[in-house]
Length: 211
Image (cartoon, rainbow, N blue to C red):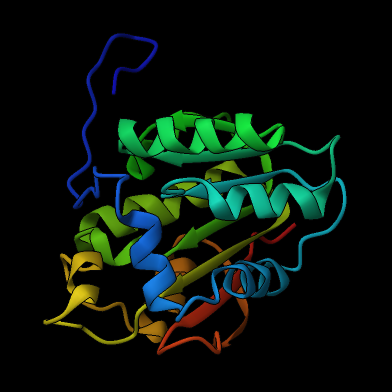
């Protein structure tokens, strides 16, 4: 990825490049309940009509498209991923469904957006792909692009899966929910809800940027 100044940036995290098979992995993990999974995430994020949303590590874009249906046609929804192939698949989905969502290539350690841009940032099954220093930079970037009073929802695995198809999701191990909460709080975000997602072992943390 190149910045406007021509500097090349690359993530230190693990990137899932192959879009083929990605949706199947999500389908398998949720036991075919992918739509219910996305609706649960939208509910946990407490999305409201008119809110602007950024989905980081958006994969093939399914959650961003679901978010758009909740915030409405006049609201901005953007998906970001470090894989060009994922972004291409996400754009194709949006075109086929006639849904106005922007998808862009970028890295979470240096989000290509101005300060105070979004009401909500979503991070689903992404943080565990980053080594700890990159997680800290990501949390700082999330705070920067959130509007005062804006929210971030982080959903991830609390334990490490070493075998089976779920190993495709893992690179740097698990992300303890307490560590996620501490990470966000160190970045200047205030945790106000957390718990089980209700699908598999997934846990969530919801935090707000103080107004």
